Length: 317
Image 1 (tube, one colour):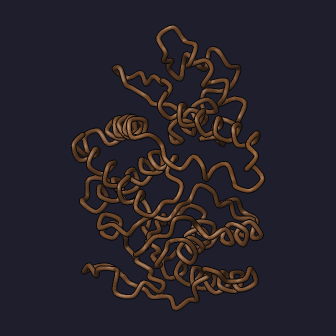
Image 2 (tube, rainbow, N blue to C red):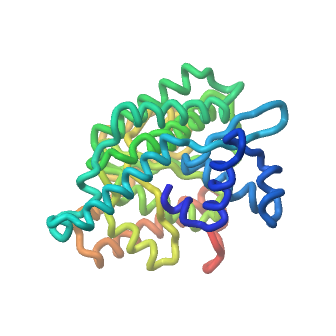
């Protein structure tokens, strides 16, 4: 959310919506206020919507955007906590974020409710509102069990629920699968599976969709993963450990397991691969680089078997 709001054009869009007469504006109305092309404005609105900053509603063929005030309260609370921590005698001893660990129950429920409303709109005609609500709250509960810092969980839960609903729609035939679906599974969904997913997305240049999951997810992604991927010029942001769920398993064409033993159920008609790889948890950076090299070779081999030509080196992924 902070990153979405840090872009000047997006911040201006939020400002226009916030001070509009009715508290909401259409993409066309926003376009009249900012001298940018409509595709550019639509892109920024999509980023703000997916980050949970804006919510949208439909009236006929027109889509209007309004602020998700509960989410903005969450942002302001986090900023207030950081500001307070900077003047605290303990500020140098303890990171400020650790003191803002949990969003209030009422605020969390508000964010979840607005997120469910947005997802119900997105999956209109595919899933009922009851199905969407159940997935949103189940996703929140699943992530809550392992997260250390819980203030951002409602937004992550909405993202997780969107992924699960998409997978459920694909598995049931209600949504198309325009490309192969690969599921990367390791124990904690914090190292190997995250590396594999990032490398496959990079090499396939968007021609393969990759999901990740963990049989026993950790609280956070191993920071060495981001370092090693950045060294390879691969963007890696916004990822978080997720539990293994039935819907993402059923949607996958290929399931790749990495050290999670028998925790992954077997479904007929799917291809299963087991990659024997060391766990990068607690490993030195050089060892994580070596593991990434091994994964890279396996990813390239799998892409070849799927008939997907890897992107040329230097091609944006």
